Length: 126
Image 1 (cartoon, one colour):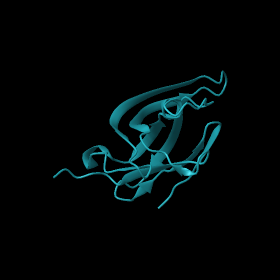
Image 2 (cartoon, rainbow, N blue to C red):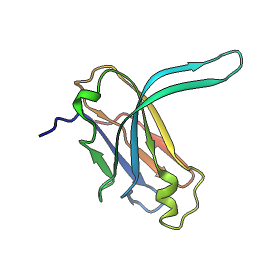
Image 3 (cartoon, helix red, strand yellow):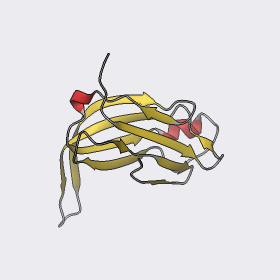
C-alpha cells in the first residue's frame, strides 16, 4: 500500500452552499521563483507532483506520494472555471492558484478554499 504525504484540501461553493464536487486539483512543487522588483516581472519553474478531483464532500486527500511531499514551496491549482462551466455558471476565475510553504514534511497541511464564481478565500486549516 502506498504512503501518502499529509496534504488535504476542501472546496466549498458558497454560491450554492454546498461542497464543490469534481473540482480538478493539481499540485506542483516550485523549483525556482523570481520577482524582479525593478521591472515587476515574475518567473517561475515548477514540477508536477500529483492531481485529483474533489469527492462528493468537496474533499481531496491521500493524493500526494509521501516521497514527493518534502519541505519546500508548493502551489495548488484548482480548476474552478471548468467546475462552474459544468454547472452553467459564468465565472471570473478560470482557476485559483494557492502558493504555500511546507516547512515540516511530517506535519499535516490542509489548504481549503471557500469559493464563489467571483472570489475565493483560503487559510491553513487543520
